[in-house]
Image (cartoon, rainbow, N blue to C red; front, side, top):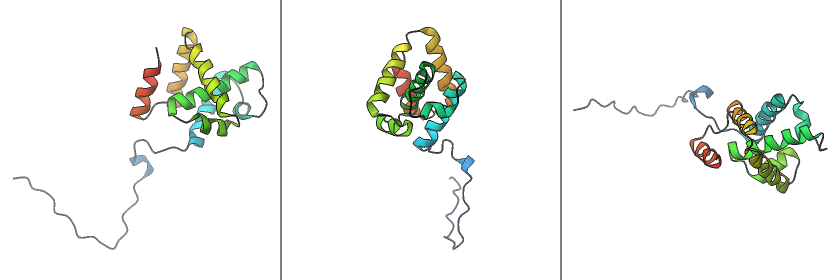
Length: 139
């Protein structure tokens, strides 16, 4: 027979708070996710992160970096077009266009490798369901 521990009587003392490091993947806010992705993409493109969320389009390099950040936010972290658009100051249809452009550019092996590296750098697909969905989108 197993020797099971007996259940202790409830005490009036407050339970100790579990440290934040005890949870393997604490939930992140969409704002936190987008800031992280923008920082990673801006560093990779050699740009100031503020340019990616600025109102004007900017140079073609800035526009591509913004599209990549939107794509990674959607595909890697399952954020909706509407949420991403709000955080980037753009319309949801603009986010959809960005995702199509970047997905189509994955046909180029160099771009596909670059995006895969950015996905790893940003910590994309830390949730199992998101990882499976992101893997299913790749060819």
